[in-house]
Image (tube, rainbow over all chains, first blue to last red; front, side, top):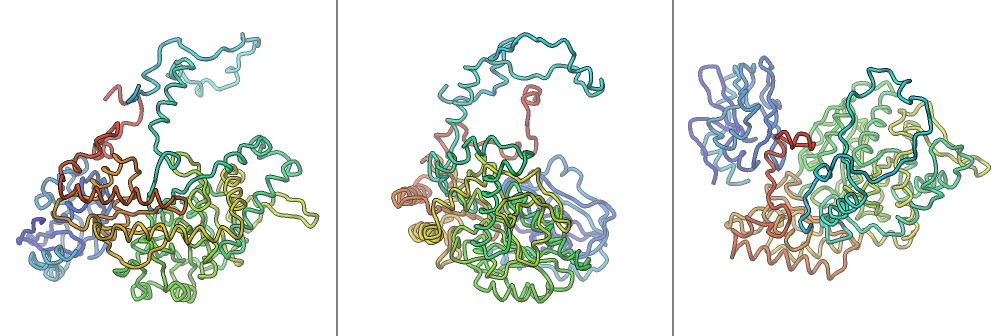
Length: 127
Length: 487
């Protein structure tokens, strides 16, 4: 069974979010990277893009499939993980330490509404 | 030679050749008329080989091919049915093969008649008013059909209709074609049984909807039983219904998309109408429309005059041209030969036989493979991997192991509804013996997954290439011999 960490929250679409002040760091879960298989490309937004919760902010492409990345919180993209342009496989190697974008959030309550580790574990087990 | 793996460039030796040209009798320099900046500075690095080199090279490569002519090819969604050889004979007739698209219509009446009659036959099988045969393949047909959709809304001054609704189970070409057509894609969810969730559809239907793209049966092989209600809802909202004809085979001559309420559709002649598919193509993607959209079909068109003569026509209200001349005419000849060979009485047996074959395999394997959507399927069905997941053997392992037994793998990891999708479509052209052989092998592989999972993870063991590095191939593709030498 895939790993789930309890220091962050999760979206039903399998992104994780970690909060530090008003900055949300976003990646995909270990469960998601495992389901996708070997990732060959990560499509990311531009710094400065405005996101609403539920917007598509990019896509991960694996040898099996391409999957949209959904932004779980609203705000402005302040940083993207440029390392992933050349080394997308880092997401497979360590999904929880490989962030994809950072967003300056405009509504902290959106974070609180996401799934905690227990709820997310249950979601994965039921898929 | 047994495991031949050379590129033709590797056979090249300077000065070796397999042709003789007569001495140059002309004293004019043919290149003089070409501007200097358009002339290449160096000779092209073409392979220099003898005739025997060429023959041996391509014969060895062709022996590595796997096709419907060599074995069972249950590639879901692709309808890899047998391509009758009479089709080839007809299309190779010099009376057809020697035609030029610019010759006078008066001198090509037979070819125009074939185009006209095939168009009519497809219209009658589909319940639609008229077809264009010009698009070159399925996705090109989708794009053409969506251009018709746009043109229709634009002609009514209804410019805000830019959204195309696509189910989450759709063929990947649907959203891709909509994007290329300049439309916005909106996803509608499916229910656990794979059919469209009408409650999820309703709120999407506003005055910005251009239409919906559907395939029926859908990509999990189930018939969308609520199609009439969906058609009614979409039409009431002012949208059009597009039918992706990839899954037409089980309905052929039995159920017509036009009768289900569809306004536009494409047909893959290389699936349903037995013309070569895949590397052996090319394809052809005719597009049919209901009466109120006929004027928007692409040019040129073939029409019949009162005196029975066929002529080439163009319509001012058309969306324009989508191909050079009339598309892949050789493919049309094959499809027309297929329709005439089967005839009205036999063409209705295609769907039931395809459906029977698919259900036979499904029922014979569902104790060992996970069947997420139970019930009678149409021409294809989807397993969600092995029933017993404890061995760690994946759908990819099973697919690769099938190659060792001389079968083509099914479509895997599509649709995205399930993690371990394995989409199987036997088609109507396979015998009971072939189906039984496939079932035996699938059962044997499921057994191996329990007794010898490591073997499955190493499979295939008998193919020339076993485990290509798909990640590197996707990330750093080497596409030319030059790049290979430099790599």
